[in-house]
Amino acid sequence: MHIIKNIQNFLLDQDYYIDIFNNFIHVYDYQELITLTDKLIELKLKEFKLIIEGKELSISNMDNKEILIKGVLDSLRFVR
Amino acid sequence: MKHYVRVRIKTDKKSNILLKLNKISVDIKNIKYEKDYIYFDILNKDIKRVKKYLVSYKLDIIDEIGIYKLKRELRKNMLFIVSVIFAVVVFMILSNVIIKVNIIHQDKDLRELINEDLKEYGVTPMRFKKSYDEYEEIITKIKEKHKDVIEWIEIDVDGMIINVRVEERILNKEKEESGFCHVVASNSGIITHVYTERGVAQVGVNDFVKKGDILISGEVKLYEEVKNDVCAKGEVYAEVWYNVKTSLPMEYELEEKTGKMRYNLMVKKDKEYVIFKSRVKEHQVKNKFLGKIFGYEFYMQKEYEVIKKNKRYTLDEAINKAISLVHEKLLVKESQTPKIIKEKVLKKSVNNDTLDIEIFIAVEEQIGVVEPYTKEMDSDTSDRTNNYNNNPVS
Image (tube, rainbow over all chains, first blue to last red):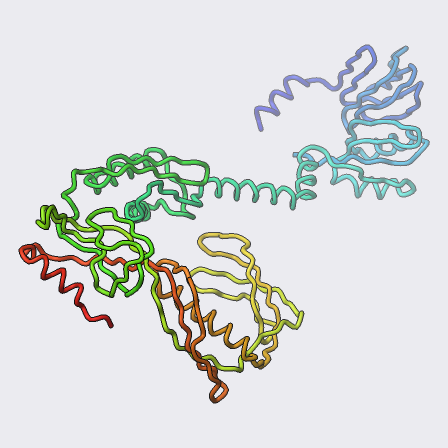
């Protein structure tokens, strides 16, 4: 089990990361889901707020650290 | 392994639900949106928490995920799966069990001899089949044991049946017929047919013979001189007469079916065992064979209830019954089936409710029996022949 933990630490040695794909956005280590509509999703991260705008936005998978958002992405803003 | 379940919540405010679920930090996967429903996978342990938090929503568990789904399906179809496994196991067992051993040879003694040996080596019905090498070993052992009797033996497995083909070893046997014999009459009568296989026929059709007369002689003569002695063989048929006396009670007991019938079960091995207690007092039984398992034969019994009634023969019925009884006795007495030529009731009287009857019966039967003689008497053949002919008829 230590080996897995070590690998995880090595790979995920950061506070957060955001992966952007064509129709998906994957956010790791978010703190809270603030707003959720099909056009706007607001996520609170440790030091800023992430505002995702687009069309037909929806959540595919979600747990307390990660979230996978699906939809047509128009813009991504960081609000400090 | 995490136990996920698929749930469905009826709502038109899907975002609200997701925001609420996010607040209580619940892991959800594979979120699907439909018109009035939202579907997702959630950990089974979180269900209680979610239900508590989303009090106003109706949450339905619609399926299980992964191994748990498989487990549930297995549990649901347990009876079917167990039945299939049981059937496969039974099939495997039965397909490896011998149900019949056919020993293919005309000679009954040889068949029995081989059968005994096969039993000794465990090749009997209701035992497991053996491998090819084991059969080869058995063949070698049997051939070694009976090398004077068996020329060749083969064991052929045909499904659940074992066919054993045997070829008998034919040795140049000494002549069996070392002794000499005549065919003599076992009864007095008029000859109807003579079939001579060996020896010289001494009688012809329509000859009257007495008991003990020589019918086929073992002495082969040329000009009254005995040239050779053989063991005579053949069949001689004659019309033989019997006077039979018999008695028959005029009253008899008759069993009549009442129409009531009950089923029972019977198991037979060396004895017959009826499984359930019979529910009818007096009954006649009809058995229907169901099957044989490990040497036990199973039968379904039909028990027909009967009542016993005392009946009385009329005189004609009694005579007919007595005649049929005499026929039965004659058939049992004779090894060959005699042909009844004619019969006549000589005397009949009813005394003390019993019919006494005397019947004359003429039958055609084989009367030739083999009787050996010794060569020492050869010098005085004519005397011996006379002896046979002068035997008092009893």
